[in-house]
Amino acid sequence: KLSIVIPVLEDARHLEALLADLPRSAPGAEVVVADGGSRDGSVETAARTPGTHLVSSARGRARQMNAGAAAATGEVLLFLHADTRLPPGAAEAVRRALSDPMVAYGRFDVRFDNPGAAFRLIARLMNLRSRLTGICTGDQAIFVRRATFLAVGGYPEISLMEDIELTRRLKRLGRLS
Image (cartoon, rainbow, N blue to C red):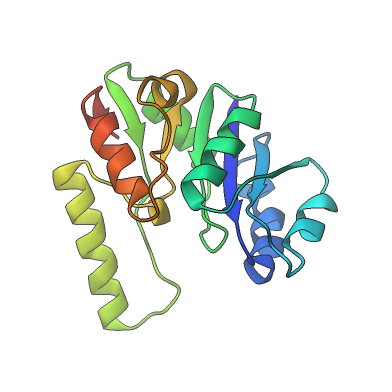
């Protein structure tokens, strides 16, 4: 079972569209929204969306993702920013990637909505860096087996680059898909 953990803080403008989109890209996935104290309607949006589990947490993306992971029931965790969309067939892609026992974690390629050449170049460089180094950012929708996530201690509760540190730890346990 796939659980999608979405940390939010004042993300109402993105959250409604994301929650509406998830049944298409990840049908049957459990959705856990981990709120860090929003006052902009994020909590209400999550609460009124059928099938969405809302968790309150102390502020801080790492804390929120750890709280969401603790509340999730799936064997596979996918961490998704509210302003990020999964590609079609994402749930199946995750299943296929993690069917290889040598794969410890995975991520998706970044693609920006802005069609400008600079944004296309940035996305290509981010994706290439990730492929070459095994280091991922949260914008790439990192996914991992729950047992592996717990084995590395979850997200380190640091204020910046928690995603980079998580993937450094995951890299020691297996390869990136």
